[in-house]
Image (cartoon, rainbow, N blue to C red; front, side):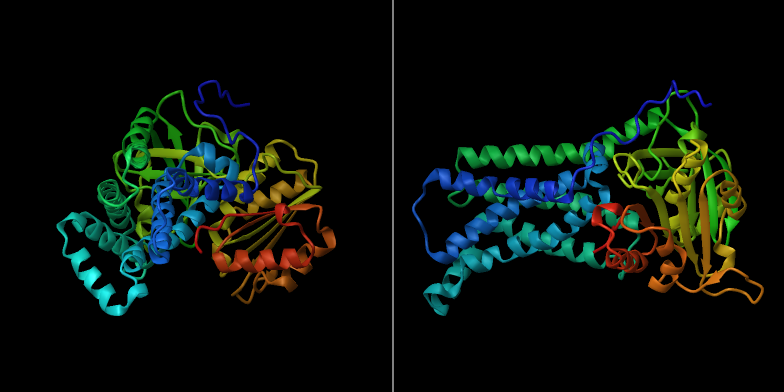
Length: 451
């Protein structure tokens, strides 16, 4: 047994809540400025101005909520799943852009004739009093476009992340100054509201860039081993430098910083591949994918490491099922390994199945360990290679409905708990297959980080 008396944080805690709960709360919060606006009982304006004012109020609240959604607060992520939070953040960024970008056009909308609209627009945009609003408007447009297209523009993630954080804060400050100095929603009540939200947004950034790094610096790790376990796949194990270290729930992930200052933005999310039984050491399975991960094999033992987390709720905690199935593709096997290793250590009695797909046989990892698990657990591992060599005797193809039916359908269906991890296209396809089998949505656990 491992002595965990020095571990500083607990694994995922609190009930896993439906996504609808977060969405309802989010919408209610968005409507707060509108309700305050109704409380003012101001004289009604023309339709365009009323629409513009309402959209602006919702847009401002959405702007400040973006900071909360990007704050990596574990008390939110372990209950709703950080993938849901990230997706809401991405969707609302687009909605926010529409709400705020159409605002100046609605102000000068040609409800009273085109010529009057043009005159009003010229007077409005030539006024020095709205300079901060104009700069904020253009900055918002640039931030949203870069957020959507930075991958296609081949901008390094670290550079984009830093510019996005600084740019969003500057834009929010300019937009707040614009809001509290112009318009009829610039009275004491709204000035107080926007000022409090701006302060909370600044505190969120301080939490990410100052408080979290200070916490990480107080609990450093180092690379204990770095082993190549497959084609472009590395199994990195880190160990603590001090007695008090992190705990986690199998299936979660950490933001991992290897070889940089704890204040560096050179950190990336990786699923944990080890079990809690292996603590205080924590392992990750990292695939070379062309970015900084292409240098993973060059990281020597002894390299300083820092952790932010754990995050995510794709765990067994709070979930039940007659049996457990893992359907994984490529490096998506990492969180499955974490849970499988824990189930093995706990001598789990329920039936367990793993269907794992890769492109080439050389990408299969820990096959011997999986075979050992089958000796002591009710466990079956189905390894599927899409482009096998002539001497491959196992399953070959992709994880389509036919393959999943061959591996799993005869073993159970709607009373199983399914974990699905891998490439986005594969996860969506597998989810459709499972739903087609009649599996309830709450029995399918996935993590989607892109729209």
